Length: 183
Image (cartoon, rainbow, N blue to C red; front, side, top):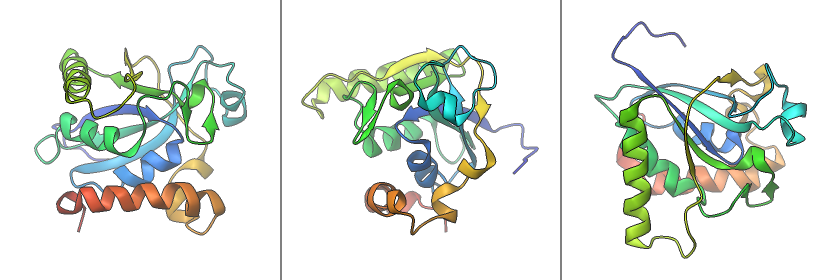
C-alpha cells in the first residue's frame, strides 16, 4: 500500500516469527502498512531459507509504516513488549535461533531514546522476572521477505502454526488493546 502522506514514520521490530508480529500490527489503528522481512544481517538479499540457517545474521522483522498522529512509536513498543517475551535470547517459544531475537531497529535518535526509555521503564517496573535482552540497534538495510510470507496469517488462518501460535497472540493483543483496533 503506498501512501503519499509525508507525515508517516517507519518502525522496524523483531520479536520472533514475523508472521506473529505482522498479524497483530495489521490490526492497530494508525498503522498503514506492515511488511515482513529481514534486517540486522551481513548478506545482501537473503532468502528465507538462508535466514533460517542462522548464518546470515538477519532477524525476522516487520517494517511498520504508521501515522504518529494516531499511534506513537512508544505505543508501538507497548504492543511489542506485550506480545512477545523480551527476556529470551534468540528464541520465542519453540522458534529458536538468532533470527528470532528480540530487537528494535531504530530509524532516528528519537526512536532510539524512546526504545531505551521504554526498556528502562519496563525493567524498573519488574514486569519480567528475567532481564530484557532486546537489542536496540540502528536500522541498516531492510529486505522484504518473499511474497508468500506477506499477510501470512490473514491468508492461512487454519494452518497449524497460525492456529496454535499466532491466533493466541492476536487474541491477547485484541483483549489488551481493544480501543486501539482498526474498525
